[in-house]
Each structure stands twice: as C-alpha cells, then as structure tokens.
Image 1 (spheres, helix red, strand yellow):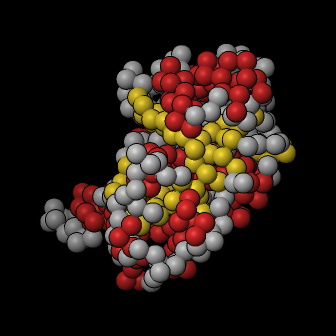
Image 2 (cartoon, one colour):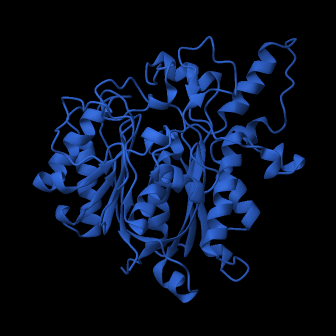
Length: 416
C-alpha cells in the first residue's frame, strides 16, 4: 500500500495567550502566564478562584446574533480557530474537491456551559421544562466538527474524538491516517474546550486536580516544580490544516512541518492516575518513532504533557528516560502548559502548534515558574526552564495523556 506523506499547511488558535497564532507565539516565547482571577462566574465559594481564560473576547466580533444562538462557547472557539487555519493555509475550497476534505475535531467535554445554564434554569424554575431547542445540538461534543464542515462545505470524513486531555491529539492522528490511506486530501484537525464554569471548576476541585494557589495565580502552573499543587484550568481552541504532501506542493502551499510518526495506546491502569513508571508513555513514544522509522537519537525536542500534577510530572520524565536512554539528556524538554494552563481536550492541538512553531523558528518556549525541581525527577534532563532557548531542531515530539489512560504522541519534522 502506498502511504502518503502528510504536511501542515495552516494553523489557527484562540487561547489564554492570544486570539491568533502570532499573538500566542509572541507571548509564549516571552514566558507570559495566561492565569488570572475567574471572570465567567463568581468563584468565591470554590477552592480555586483563578483560571486561564481567553482574554478580550467578544463573540459579537465573530458571530452575528442568529449564529451565536447555535454555538456553545466551545464551538465558538472551534470556529474561530478553524477559520484562521483555513485562511492561513490559503486553500480555496471552491477549487479543491470538497468530498475529499474533512474535519476531525477533539473535545474532552463539549458544551458544558450550555448544559450548566439549561439545567440550572430548569432546576430554579417552576418545574415546567422550558428547554431551548438548541440545548442538545449546542451541547453535544461532535457539533463543532459539524459546524466547521457546514460553514466550509467540507463533505469528507467528519467526527469528534473524545479521549479527555488527549482528544485533539487523537483528532490530528486520525486526520493524518485518513490522508495517509487516501480517504482524503485535506483535513481540518484540532480541538476546543470551554469548561471554566461552576461544574468544571467544582468537579476538578473535588478531585484535587487543580491548583488552589489563589494568592498568586500566575505562578500556579508550575510543571516539574517540587511545590506544584495541580494544573490550572484553561479554555480555547487550536486548529491545523493537514494536507497530502503532493496536493500541497501542487497548489504551492506554504508548508510548516511534516508529520512523520504517530503513536496511540492505553495505560490500562487507573481511571485518573498514569501508570507510575510511565510504561504506557514509553511505549507510545516508541510507537511514534517506529512509525516514523527514526532512531531515538534523531529527536531533538519534546513538548511534554507536563500538567503540573503530582503523579503525571513524575511518570513522564521516567518514560522519556526509558524511551531515549542516554540521548534523553540531550533532548530539550518543555511544558507550554506552564503558560497556557491546561486546555483539556484542546491541549494537544495547541501544543502541536507550539511544537511546529519551535521547529520553524528554531526557538523553544520556556517552562515558567520552576523554582526547585522535584527531587524525584532526574536533574540531568535538559529542561528549558524560565527562558526561551534558540536551538537547532530538526525533529520534535509532542505528548498528551488523558484520564482513562489514553496516550497519544505525534512526531513533526521541520519543513525542508
């Protein structure tokens, strides 16, 4: 079977660091934290009072009133991200075969804000069910992929991947494979999430999964630091245009990077905790390298999952050491979640974008807020802490792991 090459030809995003890719990258390289007190609801009764919200966002700048009635915040972020990525790719769908262009979109939860509002309204009302006719179609996790396809007339493969914090990484991997196998030529892939509401914050608080560093939100997301106390919730979306290499070259597209390998597996260990020795993570990184037919020594940089949680930040460095051996000490490691917070189902897409920018710019964004490395992490590992670094990078990896033991890895190669 002829396996086709897949390249990235467009990117778009809206997230706590910026409302487009250029603003995001500038803030990421400069080590800006996206954390601040929660404005979406009164969080004073909750254990956590802060999050990484999208800033300076007015939906009326993107949608008219009729459109807005159809969109939960998570699908608004999806549409904005996808529109920027499509524009960035300069692809003209009037000339492309729309039957061979699809959308695969990741979301960990979907329209949680709509669910909270509708159920809250019913619960505090007079008992009569007065639900909006848009309640279900706004809430369901697959609707963002549907909206993107409807707006742009994309009739190829279309669905949503739901695997918690690995959702959008799985979306990209699925899209890659559809192009590789010849089912489509162009795919819009990415993810979005908008769970900073009473249910999201309350639910993660009860799990003791998110930071409660209310006196200093901007330093709360501190992956690999000994005093980390959980991740910082974030929201937003990120999208990329994936394209068959020959298709992209034929139309003269700008190529950011090539996706040369993917891996996906399961820990089969625990509902929320990673396998403590990082076995699943080790295997998924090996799987991606085997898929790319490269050696561990070929990898220069890893954008880690690095959430700032107790168990995950220990298991992943162990997995890197096992997967790469002595070469692990030469790989530049970072966690951009230290700045963006954790976008849950959208995390993988945003971190893929950061990895691609690192390749194309030859700059690795920092992991901010590191004061003292956790003593359980090998101090000889080459973390990029607190300040961006210029490095020669040819091949870079990004990892994402989700509740349920879902592991997903992508390998990118710099465009030549």
